[in-house]
Image (cartoon, rainbow, N blue to C red; front, side):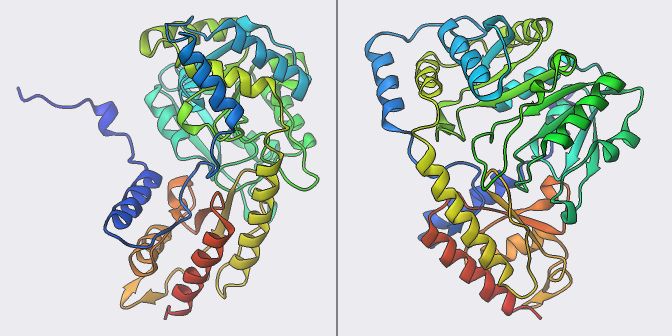
Length: 399
């Protein structure tokens, strides 16, 4: 009998984001001038005080295994952060540290899902959510948002999709890929629905600090003791502190769930990097004072990209309220052609744009809506101007 790979892994959809990024890097290696709007990470360097903490950890010999759930110091700092920023009380026993928020989400899903359990996913959503649900044995159920409501999926929109098989909802506010932010009342209604119908809420709050204008972030676990019992809050240091490569994420939730997640992680990965944990504790303990300039710069880039997208005849976008992404509509472009090649959706648009103008964007088909592309403004203003100018030229050449 020939050897083969598992059906589970063969069923995993390839990451479109990574494919576009890989192609862009290949073109750069060939000497091409590529503008990348595909990255999902800050372009800033990690603040120096965090780097210094990492160097200290190495010199001090903080290089051994830690408890699977993370060092007590880091978990205490995370609890202090929740109380300070979100008015939510957790103990270190209700927190687990992982190698990035992505691992935290997958570990949470693995801890709560049985085969066939359904997980509600407001769409467009981060492309890894449905794949992780499937890998954990669950069934993703997409609930589609609409541009005229900034893609926010409300409790009333979720309710028809709740069945006896519904085990969880994953909500991501501020949102990747569209930058929407759920309001206090919208989140409260979802919390009430979850308590009424009896399903978990996995609240991915990794973009919590990247929020603009008069918007405010609300932690899902802050809406009362009942929802807190059913809520797993996901966060990390990657986006807020420009620490994507340090790979530190965390989850907070009821003790039985955190205990189950710790057991799973003990066999799947053990502890997160000890040096990175020490640096993350330093980052979190210093609060927001070192990141304000980054947020101000993101805000300027956000407004610049929003204006330039809407200045292109045939493209449009809403002004995002958080994160560092824009969803640009292609509804008036799909069906047109460029040099004989027809644009039949977001993938062909992205491929042609990269081939013809050397600009990398992400097809929103990967996020659940083929009528859009995602653009990241985690790049310099100069790159935004150059890249958007190339996109304008490409669109103007369409027939």
